[in-house]
Image 1 (tube, rainbow, N blue to C red):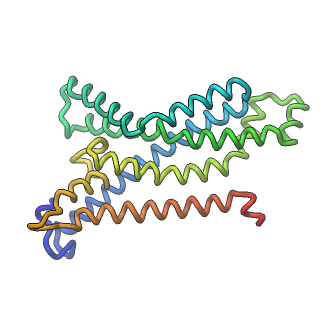
Image 2: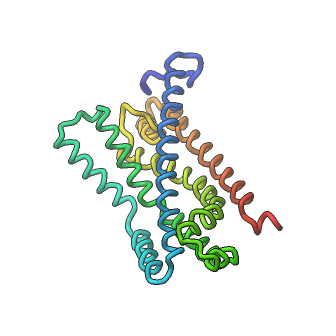
Image 3: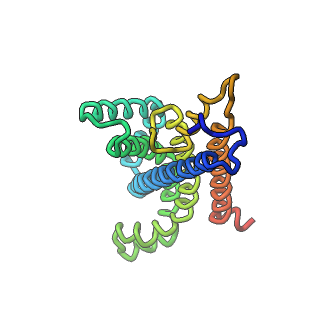
Length: 250
């Protein structure tokens, strides 16, 4: 499509409008993957961090050392290895690169790669909150009254974690979108014919040349990525200020 976009730069021409529609469809794909990966990361991080902080002792130490080890692993290398392994499975299965099955595998690889690493920070934050909350008087009262550990966690600890979970969930979305766009730009994530901001930017980069430069094919998805990331980060900052008790009382 890029070779047919007119010099009017996305004016009233049908192909110009077609490019914008493709950018918007790519945004739907990138946002969908970003939100899904963020939900996976926040869910895993909440359960992991809450379990570690609530059990404490040696269990907490072992679980946090696992987090430290995962932090030290090269993220991009892991994604590349997962992608290569998925490509090998797809090749043996004889699937067409443009088939729906191939696209499902690519998207699943992205979700596993992004969601499988993005939960580490959430786990640490939730663990710290749980360690602080379990020493509060209302938790001591629950223990004195004989409330079961499960009811203590579900009815008393978990509601007090809603604020940090919402904040870090909101901040995890732009990080996931950026990771998806970067990986798709490298050709590891979403592939044609399914559009995403990452592979659209990769296609636009090819059109930058000294003979006939179509710079808007690169600028379009990049501008949308930048505006989306800034908006989501501002939303996360406002939620952090709202749920932060220290900030609220100052």
